[in-house]
Image 1 (cartoon, rainbow, N blue to C red):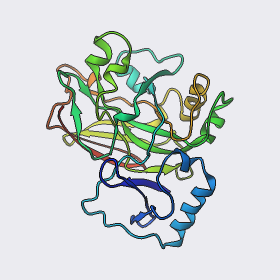
Image 2 (image 1 turned 45 degrees about the horizontal axis):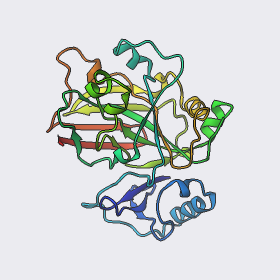
Image 3 (image 1 turned 135 degrees about the horizontal axis):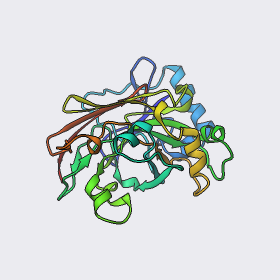
Image 4 (image 1 turned 90 degrees about the horizontal axis):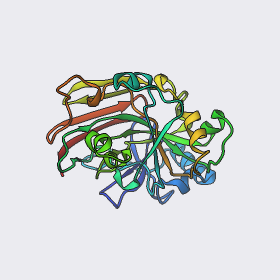
Length: 285
């Protein structure tokens, strides 16, 4: 299923994109798309049955905002340097263990919402990423297979980053990762049963129409199941938590000088095979 949330920010309602590409209203079936829904097999069964019945009301998509596909996100765990080609372009050694950092849930915006370039920013960068949404409580998992079994679905994430804040200002990476609007998510949450192999998905990103990133999740150093297993050794993952699993080569930081960092007026588009497409305009905060 392709689950999403539509409406103005803060008042989104649940929806579903059916097999014919028609937007359907789910608000009469479930109150929202969140961790509680993803952990409830009975409620998910109602959604599936309603989708298959063909009786869900159609929504007019004209002018209708698409919000983040997941409400009440608990935490966003991010994996850095998780693609062989990205490590090479930045001159970094592939890590022996996953590099883990966090983004606050309040960085999440919709897939077509405006992204703000932070004040005094000179190195705002782009990163297309596969987002993993947890559907079952995960703690001390024993195998990568167990990790995949705890995944409810997948989405497109844009891990916008400010590289000067991240790398040159001391401390951890978090200062460059948690600026306002720095995690567009969606348009859909695609349930795991529709993604045959999360290690065989193409990822692309364009800046002002120019293709910058053209990668595949096959390049991941630590695959999805292993990432979930690994993270569960250090923290409990709950339904509705999100893991951003890293970005392939092609970011501005890895380009020759002068590096083409983002500025107000730029437009970024990104997509992952089967998971949908995003488009953001950038403006000054």
